[in-house]
Amino acid sequence: MPKTQLTKTRIDRTQPGNRDVIYWDRALPGFGLRVKSTGVKSFVVQYRNRQTGRSKRKTLGQYGPTMSLNDAREIARGMLADVVRGGDPVADAQFLRQSPSVADLAEQYLTEHAVPKKRPASVRNDRSMLDRYVIPHLGHLRVFEVTYKDVQRLHNRMSQTPYQANRTLALLSKTFELSIRWGMRKDNPARGVEKFAEEKRQRWLSDDELNRLMKALSDHPNQIAANAIRLQLLTGARIGEVLSSTWEDFALDRGVWIKPSHHTKQKRSEHLPLSRASIELLTRMHAESFSYSRFLFPGRSPDQPYRDLKAFWRSVTKTAELADYRIHDNRHTHASHLVSSGLSLPIVGRLLGHTNPSTTQRYAHLADDPLREAAEIMARKMSKE
Image (cartoon, rainbow, N blue to C red; front, side):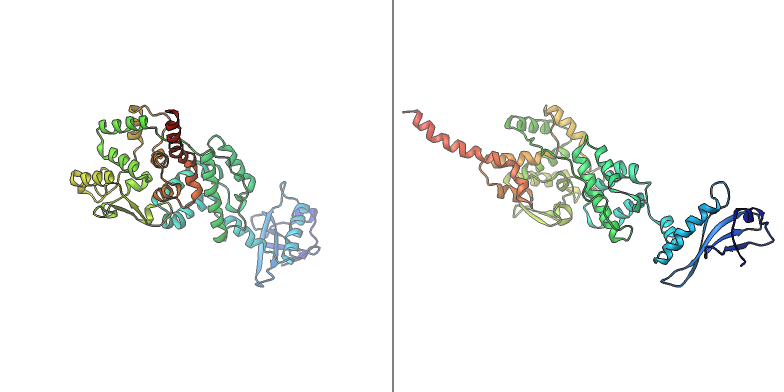
């Protein structure tokens, strides 16, 4: 390959031949001008990788209005200096082209982490958050491009739904933590983003509201769904655990519900003692038409559990005139009535499957009710005198 002193005049005068030719610059070794037989002139850099010894060539761009000789020489000088420091511009460019997007990372998170290791309901929640919030705003970015500011901007955009924003942030943090292990980047851009303050819901039913709910359940034509709510209220279980339960999970002769680990939030099996009313409900259900399926609450197909109670729950709460009361609040109702009846917080926490005692602490003020009632006994006796 010929060597020459590359100048603008020389480049302009150079004519194409019957084959491609590279003219190497004497002033900057490794920098050259490639002239194709078609007449296209482009700047190139050639270097040898210091670790492997392999020779590599990279095209900088086409000579013309968008890239002058001086521009190309400055770019080449920076690349060649990077090679001296151990860099590899060609490998870096290949990495950029092949680097997965956030949308790719989301799919890999679901297939390689969520599906094998999380409960189906959790996988559905993760997929929903990724599809609704993450991919529309970050999915087009390469994984290595995402910055702390990008994550913070997405989180701030969800300020009207702080609980959902914090769950999405936690999911992003876990996803980027895995991206580090998978060699996609070296840091976690979600780490350090401050969560929104969350107010724990304090909604549970009074005795009168509970009576109205039970009446609405009795009057509703869908008794499969009604029994699911009854069992949830009697046991304080999560609705997902109720709907996915099978007859094999219950030892009615011993009065125990053995929750399998893949159905519980803590991913461990739980043994929940059943009340007499729970056993009576389950015995009646098993004796009736529901026993044709292994699931306590079969859906349209006997081999699939009941999936969604949203429409049923809207109908029942409307009939019972219960405002701002979610199906998950049935757990709070169960716990609050136990605590206000004198049961200790640790016992209630164990019944609900709480691993952290602070989770049960929201009911602490209700534990004063039986004590206050006991204190009133002496006051009533004294007032008679």
